[in-house]
Length: 269
Image 1 (cartoon, rainbow, N blue to C red):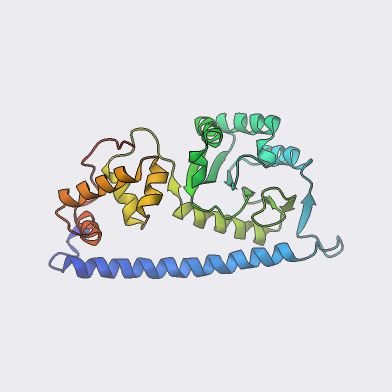
Image 2: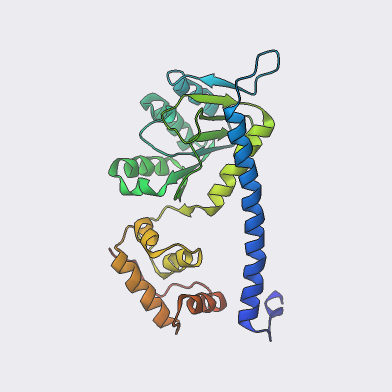
């Protein structure tokens, strides 16, 4: 069986070997994404080419952006990837546009994946917005720092803020396949590293262990799970005791041997 491959080996040696391989893959992926992000930034700093040269993008004013969003969603039957820095501004927040696109999502006309900043869960208005879209079927994850404000519509177009990281800027519409693919790869990389939105009843030991094994610090774990720092440290101490570990590294080795498990119920704050 596959599980017999490492029998007889030192668990620490196995752990170091696997970690080394994964770290190398992660470093290579980060380097690729850094090059891609740099290319996108260089594109955004160039002047808009003339029509004769074949424009890579077209500038879209704030006033026209909501209607364009509706048209792009209507034309998309696959996946819309949305990176959001703020839910307070943006063409997708205009009431009629939001109602129309959310209705299409609820009817299953397209799939929506959205990256939100982790801070959104700390704001009642942003949390209510996220809950409403989650009910409509939006797949959500939280990032400490989403790349910027943009949306990728299938493989046909990207709509992004004209100034990287500035949610109040005008927008650009890009249909160049290579640039669309670059934004898709950037989003997918950020999505892979982001965390699922914590829901009620999902705060057992496994939630704490997953975050710890990803290197998330206690303060960030507390903000993410919506509990106190004291609660996090108490739960971590209890997990170390339950696994017979004196350090977090030993806890990680134990979890690697025995699986995440879930020895507790919901966490409190």
